[in-house]
Image 1: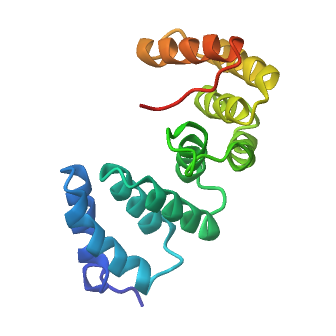
Image 2: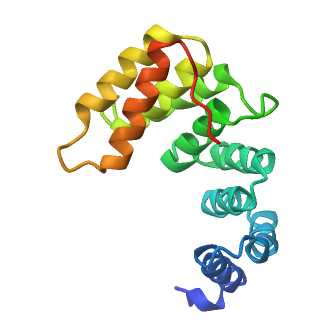
Length: 176
């Protein structure tokens, strides 16, 4: 027997939290998302949405914790893998950065696409650079740029080429 989705006790908090996230009302979304994740600790989507709210509030430590919680329940979720690796590789605060963990996470991400996703490869290149593995960062960034389609977003292409130049100078990339 099927139950009505609206009758599920966490349907309304999840839906309302998503509305708040779209409206960039991150502080309003968090208590709703916490309620869902507390009641459903295996709900990877709720965890990744919680991470998004923490990112919106610029609390990167809590975002990292939420992405890690997501990956415990959904170890192959691309959004969580990419965003966690990116923060660990690029955050300006060395207390949050971890090149070694960023590489591990980004390699898992790239395995999902068999190393054919330009954006995933860009994240991996950034992680390699943070870990001081500049030769691998260069090769990976070059491959990412090669795989871009002609219709790729010009801003993203420019950003990738900018990072490639940093790796040539043996410098990691930092988000501002």
